[in-house]
Length: 315
Image 1 (cartoon, one colour):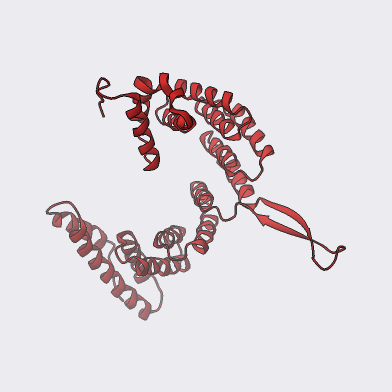
Image 2 (tube, rainbow, N blue to C red; image 1 turned 135 degrees about the horizontal axis):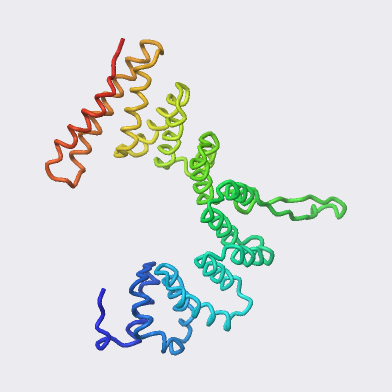
């Protein structure tokens, strides 16, 4: 957006920044534009909001590759908070953006030593390994992250002599980490471990149709009758949870096509053929009714012909 800087004041910019923060909007290009034009020289006048604004500008600077602005914001925050681990994390991100990976890793290690329960620096270390193409090391570190526990020694109330150790797992419930680990295993072609990661996520979100769909896709990719039948079950559950899931419908069609053309019992093949036909027809109807493309009948017909060429037969 182009701004007329003659018609707006620095207080208007401050209020606009506050609104973007409250609405959780990044608007990185606009933030940098307004910061340089009006607010940078007056940031000291913003009072208690100064540090929030500096962090907002800092994130925008990373988004727009303005590492010069990021460096100035970090320098100002470091003066205000010389021992802040949050500021140290931002400095590590700046070093990472400069591809100074070893220096960034060393700084993140310092943060972890100071606060071993802090998940952010551990995740940034894994992100650095990914950026360097070190997938095997990233998988190893991510597994260690998910297994990280803490021990606490306590006493039973009725006896001073009896002690017990309590162990707490800090990060095992980190769903983003399980998603990331699944993606890394898929990149390595280790589908069985990728499925395990998604099954862990399913324990946290048993009603998520997307997780059921993802497990089905991985199982189908693994191949073999057993995996295809399991994939069909997961695709069916995904459709039960969300009948409008077109991807699950096509997946169900492919699974049933595979079963139909296999050497299983004739009754199973006939049942799979009926389900495949239903899935194909349902997908066609929903594509036509929900698509924003006008007159898309020809596209749907082409898709049906392509899928139909898979040659479903019942012997």
